[in-house]
Length: 179
Image 1 (tube, rainbow, N blue to C red):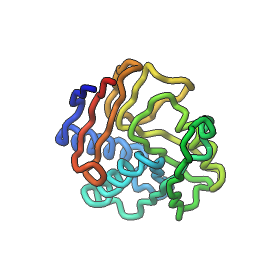
Image 2: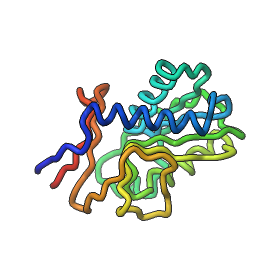
Image 3: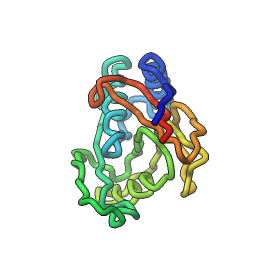
Image 4: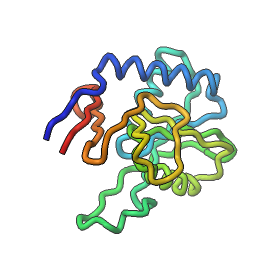
């Protein structure tokens, strides 16, 4: 198995700042917007963006949630090993709000489809957008496209995109891994 660095820590930081600025352009003070990290890996990106928006860009009333989609996926019964659910932390009201789903890699689109179903348990958002760090554009199974993307990658099917976060993996980096 070999891996190639797609983004280093500096490049990840630059992309995060660009994504934060794009969110500010669209959502101003975020008074009617909720950021929702899709568990498990979108949580790290959502937390990092929320911290950046609060600290670097002085957004005061930012609302953040984490959504577990484990049992909303259409393939959750296909695994031989028992599933471990993640935590859902939704201390926010989504009814009539603008919601921004945040995930690290957009691959087939199935996680986003599951998130669209799962969010309905918490109310009916007025609008839903998608922010992703990495968009694997030629791998989609569903007609889902990001509103905000960090980097577009043309990885072929035997390649995997691996996103490392300093909070979980000890470094900020994105790799293309060949199996």
